[in-house]
Image 1 (spheres, one colour):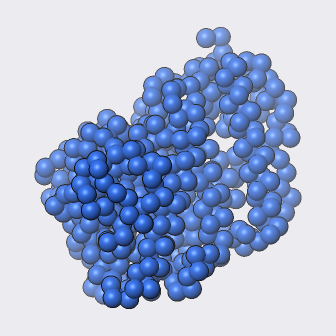
Image 2: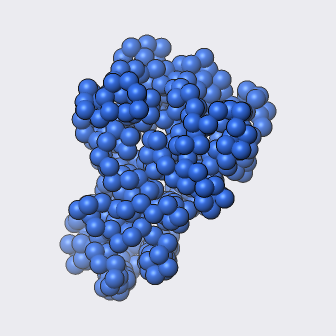
Amino acid sequence: MSHSDTRRGFLRELGLSAAMAPFIWNLPSLGFANQSRRKQRLVVMFSPNGVVPRTFWPDEPGTEFRLKESLSPLEPFKDRTLILHGVADRVRGDGDGHMRGIGCLLTGIELFPGNIQGGSHTPAGWSSGISIDQEIKNYLQRNAATRTRFGSLEFGVLVPDQANTWTRMVYGGPNQPIVPVADPYQMFDKLYGRTKDRATLASVLDDLQDDLNKVRETVSADDRKLLDRQATFIRQTEHQLRTVSDTKLNHPEPVLESGIKERNDNMPAISRMQIELLVNSFANDFTRIATLQYTKSVGQAKMTWLGITENHHTLSHEPDTNTEAQQNLTKINRWFCEQLAYLAKRLAETPEPGGEGNLLDNTLIVWTNELGKGNTHTHDNTPFVLVGGGLDFKMGRSLRFRQVPHNRLLMSFAHGFGHHLSHFGNPSYCGDGPLVLS
């Protein structure tokens, strides 16, 4: 090819601003190293406080299953959904059920001893191992053919600014919690680097119009369409950010030193904004690994837009005989499932740049929770609902296991990327190898 084989070289060759890098990262006709093979992606979505089993789990195993109320939003994606009942977090040790539930969820290993005291049991600290998303990220980043700009992106929705075990599920290694970005403005700035002052938010495109025109003259017709879609997305996002700011549908103005303040009623708007940014980051190949964390373990959100005034965690402790509480918990989990379905929809309607099909064809979304059931704090039947085609699992099924350690499922995710781990997390729970899901 006539142009440079690196992005930086291409920018220098055409005299382009460094701010153009996000726009050219995923243009297939430029032939950069990580455009030469299929792009596989993983999203782990977290929601807290367990589920209502009778309104969540299908009764029928196999392919002829019926989605119950909590999972009904996935009906359009039923043939691309894999529901795993009977997967258990067997990791024990320090910390209460919620702490171990989220801290061991993606790491599969015990928490360190520490001084964070939960509602019961012994105090604990951070996880003593890396999380599976970061393990896979590191594997992908070691190879130029799968390396991306960020490696991974951690999105949050109303994750409180509290540095404790209940708020962190992603770990770069032992004692290395990774903070999710819970403000869409901050995430937008991370992706495009141009929104330091929201009060004077100006279009990042205005200064780059000449550069965009230069690139349009260099790339293929299909890539010109990709550039136009990116430019349209940014303008729409900036308009949305301005509108949300003006109507106070966002978090209060973030002061990064002290963190982002929680604003309960903004949760639906923030969720949509973060999902749009996540999909855009995949379309631009900024990353192939992402997490989307809703609130935290012991999440206290009040779903007022669903007509629910009690906080989520308090409701989750109500007995099964409290019919109203069970109905409200079902509504809450259905709402989380609607967010999952919206993410799947946006991925499905976004063409795969330079490849066949759409983003969902090459993405696996994993929806999970720190508990199987809130009022018992059990880690048996930890929810794992998988959507998409990223790892070539056999979808369109509801499977029942006999409380297999979730470490084996985490290994399956790594193996799906070609990363053939012999164990992950605590080796005691990996003896039978990865779950066979294909």
